[in-house]
Image (cartoon, rainbow, N blue to C red; front, side, top):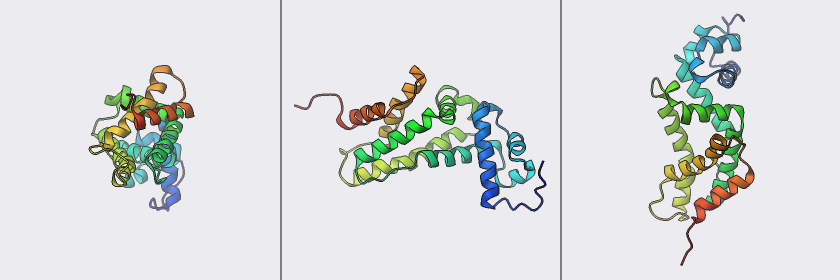
Amino acid sequence: MEDVTGIDLPDVAARQRVIDAALVELTTRPIDAFTLQAVAVRAEMDVGVIRQVWPSATTLMTNALDQFFDRIVPAPDTGSLPGDLRDYARSYAALINSAMGKRMLNALMISPRTWDLTNTRATYLAERQAKVGAVVQRAVGRGECVTGTDPDRLIDLLCAGLAYIVLAYGRDVTDDDCEYVVDTLLNGITRNP
């Protein structure tokens, strides 16, 4: 194991090494097997040094997943709701088509108890909703949505429609799937008189 006596963990490179090691751990092991010690071994750092920044495995896991999500699925700002939802749908599809995304789906939807020992799951989801909900809030402010549009429910419907494809059918989400889900959300399925 590397001697880390001189490493200042606020150093960006050292922190990123820990985050990267955490993401590899999350990709290769079940979430309930995630530990600071395993990340320390993978990052070749002393667990005590890692604990200075991330006092628990759930804190590190949540931080790593948050950074991963922000990198893969940024909150778009194209200037229109259809553009934002299409960009978001494609980014979200790329996430859930990945190995990490499939693990996250399993942990969030199928096996939530293996993650949520200290309310980490709820905190993670609330932070995700706040970031993505801003997309819909901007559209509400531009007058693109009907009165009473709920940003959280709209994003939930979009994500659920795409995630179901991966979970139920075991296949990757395509661009056509993204277009269909977004168009259905925007237009509904009933005929206008």
